[in-house]
Length: 94
Image 1 (tube, rainbow, N blue to C red):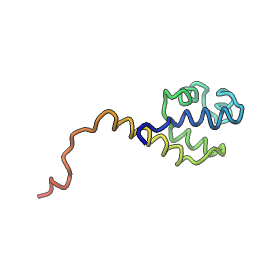
Image 2: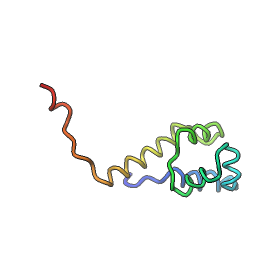
Image 3: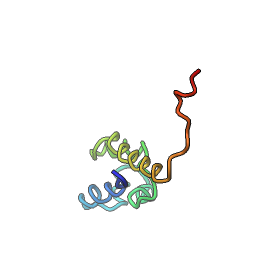
Protein backbone atom coordinates (compact mmCIF):
# COMPACT_ATOMS: atom_id res chain seq x y z
CA UNK A 1 0.00 0.00 0.00
CA UNK A 2 1.48 3.34 -1.03
CA UNK A 3 -0.04 5.55 1.67
CA UNK A 4 -1.49 3.50 4.54
CA UNK A 5 -4.27 5.10 6.53
CA UNK A 6 -3.28 6.60 9.87
CA UNK A 7 -4.41 4.29 12.70
CA UNK A 8 -5.90 7.34 14.43
CA UNK A 9 -8.35 7.70 11.54
CA UNK A 10 -9.39 4.08 12.01
CA UNK A 11 -9.82 4.64 15.72
CA UNK A 12 -11.84 7.80 15.08
CA UNK A 13 -14.12 6.42 12.36
CA UNK A 14 -14.44 2.72 13.11
CA UNK A 15 -14.37 2.75 16.89
CA UNK A 16 -15.22 6.09 18.48
CA UNK A 17 -17.80 7.23 15.92
CA UNK A 18 -19.32 3.76 15.50
CA UNK A 19 -19.81 3.43 19.27
CA UNK A 20 -21.26 6.94 19.50
CA UNK A 21 -18.60 8.07 21.97
CA UNK A 22 -16.87 11.42 22.27
CA UNK A 23 -13.11 11.71 22.30
CA UNK A 24 -13.34 12.89 25.92
CA UNK A 25 -15.40 9.86 26.99
CA UNK A 26 -13.15 7.46 25.09
CA UNK A 27 -10.05 9.01 26.65
CA UNK A 28 -11.59 8.70 30.10
CA UNK A 29 -12.42 5.02 29.53
CA UNK A 30 -8.92 4.33 28.23
CA UNK A 31 -7.26 6.21 31.09
CA UNK A 32 -5.46 8.73 28.87
CA UNK A 33 -5.81 12.48 28.55
CA UNK A 34 -8.29 13.92 26.08
CA UNK A 35 -5.45 15.89 24.48
CA UNK A 36 -3.37 12.75 23.95
CA UNK A 37 -6.22 10.88 22.32
CA UNK A 38 -7.28 13.91 20.30
CA UNK A 39 -3.77 14.22 18.84
CA UNK A 40 -3.91 10.58 17.74
CA UNK A 41 -7.41 10.63 16.23
CA UNK A 42 -6.63 13.90 14.42
CA UNK A 43 -3.50 12.25 12.98
CA UNK A 44 -0.99 14.53 14.70
CA UNK A 45 0.54 11.78 16.87
CA UNK A 46 1.30 8.11 16.44
CA UNK A 47 -0.27 5.19 18.25
CA UNK A 48 2.12 4.37 21.10
CA UNK A 49 2.69 0.93 22.56
CA UNK A 50 0.97 2.17 25.71
CA UNK A 51 -2.16 3.28 23.84
CA UNK A 52 -2.14 0.07 21.80
CA UNK A 53 -2.15 -1.96 25.03
CA UNK A 54 -4.98 0.16 26.43
CA UNK A 55 -7.04 -0.36 23.27
CA UNK A 56 -6.44 -4.11 23.51
CA UNK A 57 -7.51 -4.11 27.18
CA UNK A 58 -10.65 -2.18 26.17
CA UNK A 59 -11.52 -4.91 23.66
CA UNK A 60 -10.66 -2.96 20.53
CA UNK A 61 -8.37 -5.26 18.56
CA UNK A 62 -4.92 -6.32 19.60
CA UNK A 63 -1.96 -4.17 20.55
CA UNK A 64 0.05 -5.94 17.85
CA UNK A 65 -2.53 -5.01 15.18
CA UNK A 66 -2.57 -1.32 16.20
CA UNK A 67 1.22 -1.18 16.19
CA UNK A 68 1.36 -2.95 12.82
CA UNK A 69 -0.89 -0.25 11.36
CA UNK A 70 1.35 2.44 12.81
CA UNK A 71 4.51 0.72 11.57
CA UNK A 72 3.11 0.42 8.04
CA UNK A 73 2.34 4.14 8.09
CA UNK A 74 5.79 5.03 9.44
CA UNK A 75 7.63 2.89 6.88
CA UNK A 76 5.61 4.36 4.01
CA UNK A 77 6.44 7.88 5.21
CA UNK A 78 10.17 7.07 5.40
CA UNK A 79 10.14 5.53 1.92
CA UNK A 80 8.33 8.56 0.53
CA UNK A 81 11.13 10.74 1.89
CA UNK A 82 13.72 8.75 -0.05
CA UNK A 83 15.91 5.95 1.13
CA UNK A 84 19.32 6.80 2.56
CA UNK A 85 22.46 5.64 0.80
CA UNK A 86 23.90 2.63 2.56
CA UNK A 87 26.63 0.13 1.85
CA UNK A 88 25.48 -3.49 1.91
CA UNK A 89 26.87 -5.24 4.96
CA UNK A 90 27.93 -8.36 3.10
CA UNK A 91 30.48 -6.38 1.06
CA UNK A 92 32.32 -5.31 4.21
CA UNK A 93 33.47 -8.81 5.10
CA UNK A 94 37.10 -9.62 4.24
